[in-house]
Length: 97
Image (cartoon, helix red, strand yellow):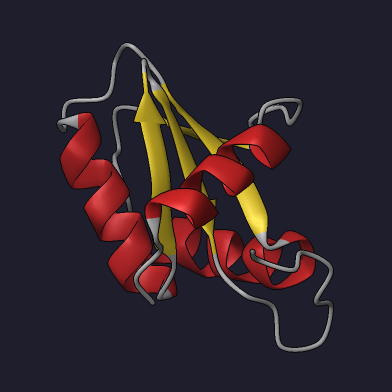
């Protein structure tokens, strides 16, 4: 799903007050992490993921791997934080403009 600029701005404003609930460390992105992020996205739709200093991968690569693995959209990469969005099948709460 490709997000428009207006939708990304809207989602960034929604994500501003969220705290990161996942951290990517030196092990990088693995199958287990992708599965957990996918489950969390189904429940919450919008997630922040923190990249730790000891992560060996580039933050853009981490964001791509997570977005591809979970079929989500990258809303923003700011500092060491990634914001992901995926429309929920059962728990839809966010209505995009």
